Length: 196
Length: 83
Image (cartoon, rainbow over all chains, first blue to last red; front, side, top):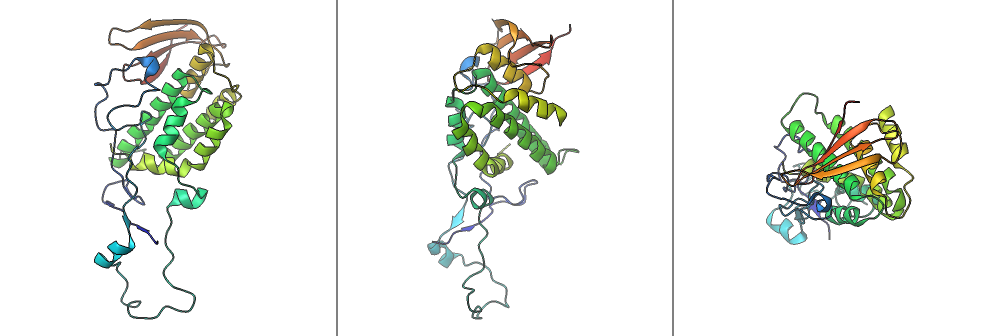
């Protein structure tokens, strides 16, 4: 079945090119008193997955075949009523970047859970990774507020740096490192879509 | 960029088995952007804070001492201590 991804809200600054899944990070963390050694292993109860990234279970909003009947896609007048040329049945769909690039869809929450469970890195390292992710989310917040210096390129640079460090740390768990590398664009999208 | 590369080189090469606390703390220090000069810290001292957090001091192979604060909600910050 063909599915067309529809961005829900493009008006928010920094929400360009996203199918927005709103979630996480707004609630104060002060309520959660976790033993520090367990904090990396315990999921937070506020919908945050503990590493700050979106854990929204909802897939991006889609339009199914049945939905299309109710909400037909707008077509330019020049196209309406005309038979498409031979070999061109429909306009090329724009696939989601992460899936298109890696060929697989990864659950961000599952990845975070695997990082929590791996023995290749210790508790304090996991807490440091989580703190780095939270710092990135703070940067996303400032980017959305159009703060000077918090450009998308700088965000991506910070994200790539953290990704490289995590991959280096996961030398003892190459399977997980590979999955994280393959899911990097999806993780990036999760970071951009996180609700702050 | 050079600091990143140094951090990545230091962080790489962990064995598949569980890491020691000394290695764990060193990795956390490096991950938070500080220079450590090796993969293991020494002179680890741990204490609890009144708010339920954790306070750790440790010495890196390069001689620098660091204070690691873990807040009750699990946020980890690293500060270099004066020599």
